[in-house]
Amino acid sequence: MITYRSITTTDPEYESEKALRNRVLRLPIGRTLSDADISGEDEQTHLIALDGSGTVVACVLLVIPGDGTAHIRQMAVEERFRKRGVGAGLIAYAEQTARGMGIRKINMHARVYARGFYERLGYRAAGEEFIEVTIPHIEMEKTLEGEDDEETME
Ligand SMILES: CC(C)(COP(=O)(O)OP(=O)(O)OC[C@H]1O[C@@H](n2cnc3c(N)ncnc32)[C@H](O)[C@@H]1OP(=O)(O)O)[C@@H](O)C(=O)NCCC(=O)NCCS
Image (cartoon, helix red, strand yellow):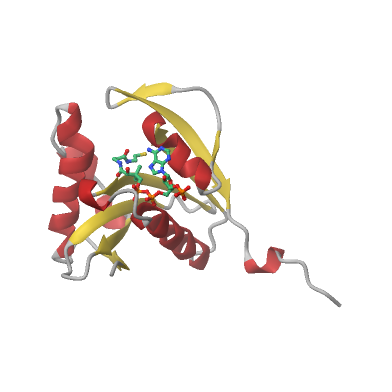
């Protein structure tokens, strides 16, 4: 069973989160997670997925600039847990967390490889592809529907 949690950089799971990000997002492109990658992270929102034994199997970070938006970064699912809905579940949890903070719009620099994943979850490409950390990316965004957006019957 997968559970989703919010952690801070002082929680013990933060070390596992960084190790996962290094394995999934950095080593495959010939890099390691750097000081620049983790700079300012104590002010970001860290969301993780845990398997039944409490192992961190996925993570995503939210940067909240304070203008009603959130920026998604460092989305990673452990390879053997992919294509099982863990990533979609974590994004749903991130959207629920963001809504709870009054955020109405989420954006990200998505790896082009993952574009279809985000499109299935309602994100749309905004702009042209560009290179970041040596690989093609594209900006994607989604406007979150709030509960007060639902039509009411009189
Ligand atoms: C991209 C990633 C986060 C997807 O996580 P996941 O747990 O495998 O995704 P899910 O199983 O929740 O998939 C949800 C849906 O998206 C689809 N999907 C998953 N990865 C996809 C991809 N790379 N391209 C297109 N569709 C994809 C699934 O088939 C599924 O579709 P369905 O609902 O029609 O069955 C994961 O593959 C990953 O961590 N990749 C390496 C790191 C990376 O690229 N991170 C993103 C950086 S922006």
